[in-house]
Image 1 (cartoon, rainbow, N blue to C red):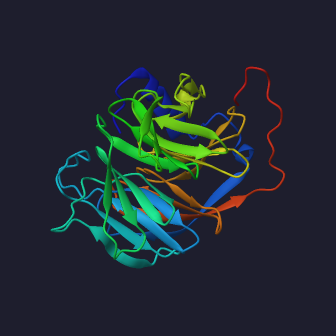
Image 2: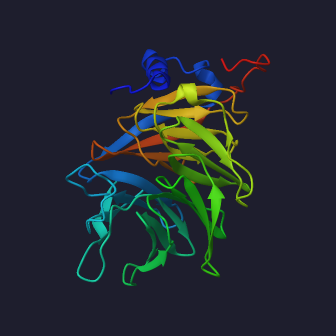
Image 3: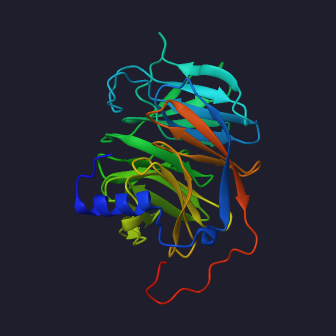
Length: 308
């Protein structure tokens, strides 16, 4: 890994030394690797349909390592929760429809929504039905998608924007976002994201009116990519450049490493089975972890200015 500025160098040193600003048990969670599946092609994102017991993997499928090329390539794989492959290319480019480096996904109302550079794909979970397209004029690098159960929230990495998409009216509104926004997630009426180049986590205003609020933890990350919120309102972050999965406490004061994983991109959690899936973007594999809550690990009350 090559560090390109002082901030990244400091983060690299902290991560490689094992220091993450807290004692290990403050996370209250642990990850245990239980499986690994290979033979993907730049797997960038994962989404779990826990009711149907299926796991979707978005493959960019690139030979140039570009990741943002509208080259008519890309496919979606489907797995069982244990990692067994149902169909390697469940949906892929063909004569009727082409993908362009598919990335983040979310599931709502029996449809898989997929970020596909400058458009959203509406992919019925019934593979016999055709894919539709939602155009977002001006969008450049659509990256990740989340839903609050009504609307979709989409990050646009190159434009430094996020969008709220109303699926009833088809309209979309811009949401103020940080530069190089990447992963995005909605949780209990709150909206969170990460910036891969600013090395920071943010809370966004779903209405789009207020500026993003940084967590103030950028010294602990090298290149955050995916973000998920756990049932205790704490966070798991995948650091694609730091090769780690990290935990941030709900009060945003403590950061700890849960697992080392090569180049983890957009992670997903199956809350029903307590599983976490991490796609290794450049390794062409997916790692499955058992996610376990640890008893009696509530952090001690920190000093006023302490994160350690």
